[in-house]
Image (tube, rainbow, N blue to C red; front, side, top):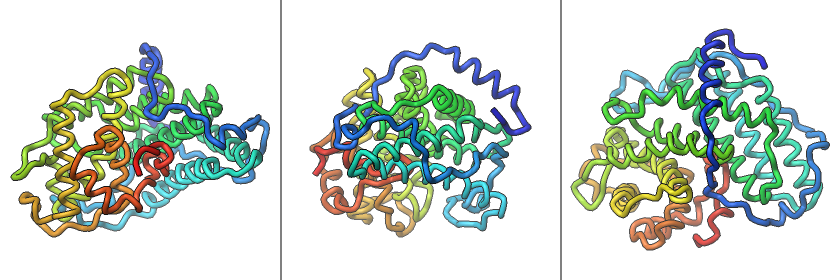
Length: 369
């Protein structure tokens, strides 16, 4: 395994400790099911993928933010350095390519297409797993963010493939080891932030928790789900009462004309974390579901009736459809939530796909119509 020149010994020690922790079984939020594609699978491991992945990225993660850090609301964009753009393009190109392979499996119409898609998935994963990609400790805050977003996308996509292949797709030992190592590094990155007195505990932490939770469900590591669940409970506690029947997340509300956009962005991992808690014996209390529902009230009102949210300090930018994908798992669990239903009635035909949580989730929530 090749690694970046810095921090190798530290990573090895941390990973060794992590791998030594007890790892109880974890239930996936997306159970295995028989599908037309799963019935097509025979043997895919001997097939050759015609499309090679980008070279494994093992270099530094000293990346710049796309937002001007002198802007208190973090809404003003700034030009990325060539080096940051190069690295980000290589990393996002990889996990976007993985998700395109997942889409090909979902849409396979015959045995050859289904098996070739999984052969390509295996090839692409092995290419980065065997090289220890994304494990550098030479990392900036934005580099940590890119790493956790990548892990969220990769593990979410694999969770979905495992469900839709009826568990016929299996990770190799090298792939499991790499994902466990990435998970350990993301926990190391975000554990110091996992407290309410940390000034910037925000959507980055929720997404880190979802990345860890998705990987924990994929690798049957309940200890990782416990770590992620702590972030969920802190986020629920962090929410503040608004002027109406809603709660808000202080740091997301502080994003000026992006406040509602970032509230939706935060809801994606929070709702998925709540679902993971439910299926793994840590269900939310009635009070906790109420608090999450009141954050949903804010998100919905911000799209449907922006003037009803007194705390907004600027006219809001339109929320992208993909950031409202949380409606599917939320309505699966809370089908009578009035404002969520109203919002879904407005946007339901346009939502379902978000690469950062594995692509198109509609097949996983057939009860939401």
